[in-house]
Image 1 (tube, rainbow, N blue to C red):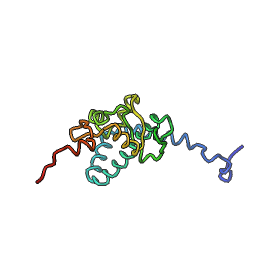
Image 2: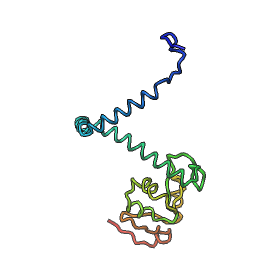
Image 3: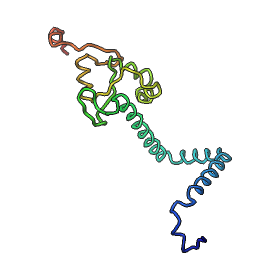
Image 4: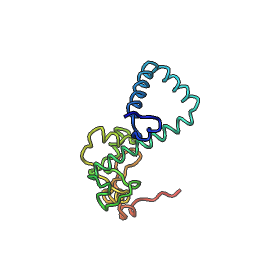
Length: 171
């Protein structure tokens, strides 16, 4: 059977597309490898001359990456439920990781607080972590006196009786 221009509609829509697309990608990779330094220099010039746009692009990428890491960690430590282990709250905007035995402040300082999700992923999700909503997190902090001061050291809350016995200073 011979195909004429009028018979082109008989062909599947993707006919030849996959082969042509793969060939285009292969040629682009070859060209890039042959001209890698020119690509890098051009990109660097653009980033320098468009610093605000570049910052916006990077910020968007970083936020997306952060959210992906956060979801992976929450999914793992909540056994796939993405819920607070205490009350069952499931809005990811208010979920957080909690160090079961305390000491989260010291852990964050060791490996940089903003990179904690990535650290947990790279270290194959170590034990001792749970997912709590912020309400349950603060209730736990209060019940277990986990209030770090500026030095990162835990200090105990004073009881009302201790507060009354403290000497007040008049200025």
